[in-house]
Length: 476
Image 1 (spheres, helix red, strand yellow):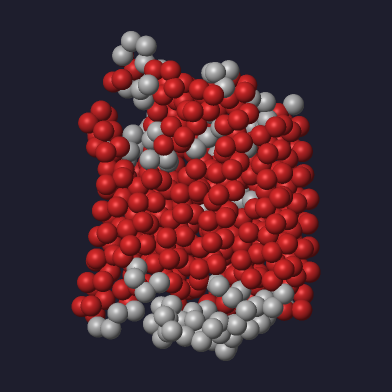
Image 2 (cartoon, one colour):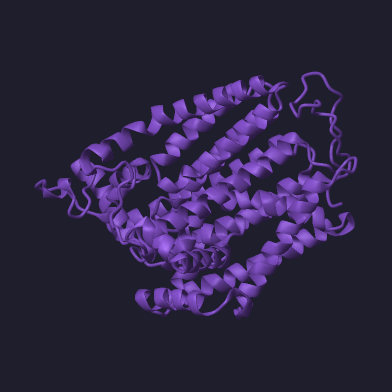
């Protein structure tokens, strides 16, 4: 299969831990073309993300004026902003913005940009957007490093990881605007990197503590970084089951979970304590417009829950490569009702799909098939070892956590989330790059893998340019 020449389990012992004294792992031949593919993929990301930063008028990105108000509150007033109608909004001179629901880490990061540009709005947007572009680049490089730790001899997996992570249009778009999504993606990629260190090393306690710190930092950026909870659970359980004996495994798992939770609490616990004191809830929201007023409504009307869940899943899939929430002409209310009516009135087996839905669904199904085949492969030289399986499972854990969280957000917090659900995907897109890379490397024959990778990159570049043109036309 593609890119698996010279691969064995020589570098890992029977428990899936990197051995201290093992035979040298054979080098995969022909690394230079894969390195070139990585460089081109990163150049594509930089060009498209910077392109979005240039073509989108300052202040026209999602909630950019509100994000700027947050930065101005820190830079000028030296204080956190207030939520509308919140207790702090009554303070004289306090800046009020709905983005006060978010923690301050990203806004503290770009506050020096505000000072350097003298508070001039247009220059600030330009420079701060470029900072976001670099944060997105960091997320891609970190997920590549995480993959390298567990796939050290499979250059094709590393190159395909960079290729897919670099060509998600939604990541490019949010990295080209003023928002906290790219820093959130960076912290999740950092968490996966520490997870990979815990999987690949003989001493996982310190990496697990650093994984908890990464989660804590992420929670000071945006709540969607809680996807790392799924990663922590998967890694702790995976490492625990390698221990001989049930009690030893339980003790090891509890210890690893404990150090991760401690790292998280030490870094971000103060933010949730503050919110609880101010608002009476640790995870405050600017708007509370749930699809169901009470959990009993979900039990009495399960079709509502199913309709929203299917609508969200559809939008998540269709928004992987394109920021579709920007391309709608319908009003918010009309679109929401259209989604619900479609799901409530048309059985799933009788639904019709548009071309873009069919293409994305086909790609996802093919990727799932490739992952299943890779997972079940037991052939010498191509079977996945324990750390590789754990990284795949951890990436899936992050994705599942995000999907469940978004369903909760729509049903119990704010139903308008269904209108732009794709905006929440950047935190898991680098991890999806790993999954797509493993699937593609398993499905593509070895003699065709390099040519196929080039074709995939060309097709995704063409698609991304088409999407960028549509976004530019919409902005004009």
